[in-house]
Amino acid sequence: MSALVSAFATSYVPSLGLAPPAVHAAGRCAALPRMEVSREEESLRVLEEELAKLKAENEQLMSPTRRDLFKIPFAIGATWSTYKAVTSPSFDFPGLDSLKEATRAQLYSGPGERAVNKFFPGNLGSSTVDHLVARTLSARGFTPENTLFATSTCPDEVNTIPGELTDLLQTRWGENFALGGLGGVPFVGKAGLTAYSHHVPDSPGKGKMFIVFAPHVGVEADGKVGALKRVNQEGVSTACGASIGAYNGIIKEIDGGGVPFQVGDDRVDGVPVGTSTTFDAQIEFIKQKLKKRIVNIEETPDRIAYITYLMYGLAREYFVDEVLKATPGIWDYADELTVMGGIMVNRPEGGDRFMPLMFQTRSPEAGSTVDLYDETFGTRPDLTRVLQNDPVLALKFYDYDLETSSVAYNARLKKTASLPSKKKAPCVDSNPEQCPLWATAGECTTNAAFMSKECALSCDMCPP
Ligand SMILES: [Zn+2]
Image (cartoon, rainbow, N blue to C red):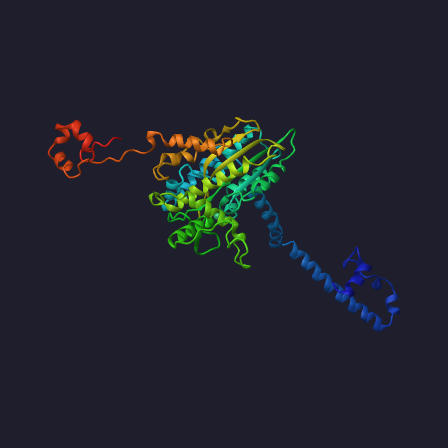
């Protein structure tokens, strides 16, 4: 509105543009000089034009199209609220998880799905894990108000995708104290764990700690383990880059006959600026620890899947033995500690999967550990096939607890290893040249006692 209109509007409001101007009402008009009247008439004409324009604008403002425009922000607001409600962990109804799992199986099948199920049996969807864990922990008195949640997962952004496990758990339980470094190893150490345990909420009495540790691995749609096409990237990259990088480094070191890295050597102390491995301490730690664990890798059905299990073992040992059990003051503010360990499987589509391998809780008292795995996730999958057909190795991934010391644990493991069930004797012929001939001649039947002992392979009499 022009300054002129503003000036007139002041005198005509509230009958803006409707009442005849006062100058026309009295005979004063005639007494005014012609020039003055003409200017006033001109001003009135401008005013009427301005008012007509305003009126037109007002009508346009209230037109159906404009009204629809006004509705858009409200529609966006309503849609966003619905989305927030539906995707929040508290949004639930009976059978929702089964529905999601069934839908996923329909939508996402093929090599990727088969590889995940083959190498990481017992894997579950993020939402399913969140709900199952919430049911178990709620029954034990865990609430968002009395619990402080923590994770020891790799910093890789694929582990914090909205709607996947870490995000769901954090939304449900509140904040997330991040204990993890590369590969999911809890590099914050005892100092970090002390800080975490001292941040546990004051509830009436003491609060509760819930920690998830989980190395991760990508599985591509074509079934390649250790590969992942990330959102907004065209190419496929490695996941977990840290553990695969460490593994490749070890192989290169072995192939090249290189001198292994040692703490205290020149490459750590007194090296030229910019070449120090100090700032790569995490990957060097993983390399050293991983190297000792790689045994008979050629016997494993998939090397990267196997490395992922080794990383789980590494993260667990470091977390449980070297940090958790060795941190004084962990019970200063809490009366219960629950730990869930497993492998996070990142996928380009169809949602992530989580393979639970450990779910235990304990209080400060010795001997108080309760295994929550079975009541939460059901029967544990048999890992023998994916772990070099070695039942002892498979057992390692379950037989571990929050209290037993490493010494006692290793002694128990050795005892188990000496059991005759460890490995079957190979089924062979004692006389590889004659046995097939004798078998053809019918000796397997006519001379069964001898043949079953000496020519088991040719007679197809191998013990089950
Ligand atoms: Zn990683």
